[in-house]
Structures are given as structure tokens and as C-alpha cells.
Length: 67
Image (cartoon, rainbow, N blue to C red):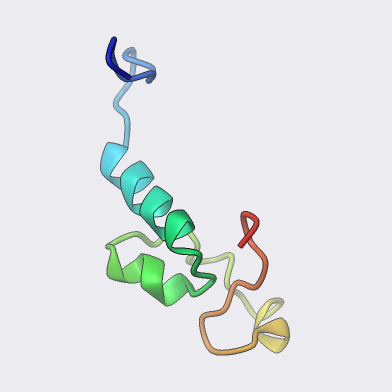
């Protein structure tokens, strides 16, 4: 990282979205509402009627990204 940030420079990078999602991963949360509080709605349609019966609580994404 001292030599630069390893990102593609030929197109716009959604750095704020990447940062918010990384912070959410590192928090260990499986609650999509915590991610939405950070202003990110990337999981909007993923949390659908298919997942709701499997959820431990409203907004639970269960074991996602190794959480």
C-alpha cells in the first residue's frame, strides 16, 4: 500500500461502497440492516422471500462471507 492503491484506474471505482462493505465484513455482522446503516444497499434483492424463512431475525443474512 505504500506504493499506491491496487485498483483499476481506467474506470470509476466505488471506493465508498467497498469501504463500507469491508467495515461490515470486519465487524462480523450478518445483519443486512447494519450494512444499510452505512448507506449501502447492495444486498437489497438478495434478502428476499427465499431467505426470510431461514433467517434468525429480520435482516439476518446467515453465514455470508464467512461470518
